[in-house]
Length: 105
Image 1 (cartoon, rainbow, N blue to C red):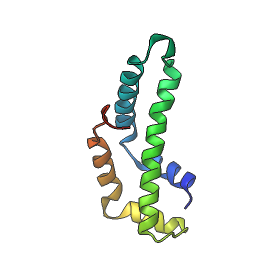
Image 2 (cartoon, rainbow, N blue to C red; image 1 turned 180 degrees about the vertical axis):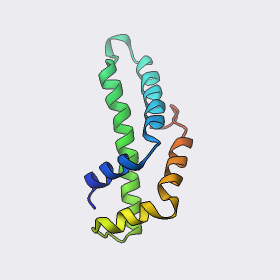
Image 3 (cartoon, rainbow, N blue to C red; image 1 turned 60 degrees about the vertical axis):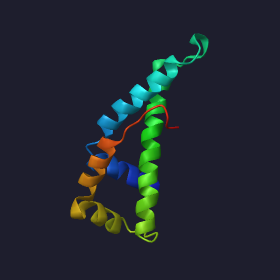
């Protein structure tokens, strides 16, 4: 499974995306308000920055799982790992517990 396939699959099975994006948007909005007024981003760019954090998170998950599967490209191996043993549920719980604050990044 390549990164794009994983991203699409993970987004279809996760329940944590909206919660994470809310936190990421709050973080990015807070950062934006600290910029000089003339240098502040518009709402679209702030939302894109939050989406970028989500993409980075999913990319890191992809790399970690890829290492566990010893670089298997078989989609069935990937989906089997995620579907078994409540892996997605555990990932959702972990993502929900992520504390985004301004000391990160």
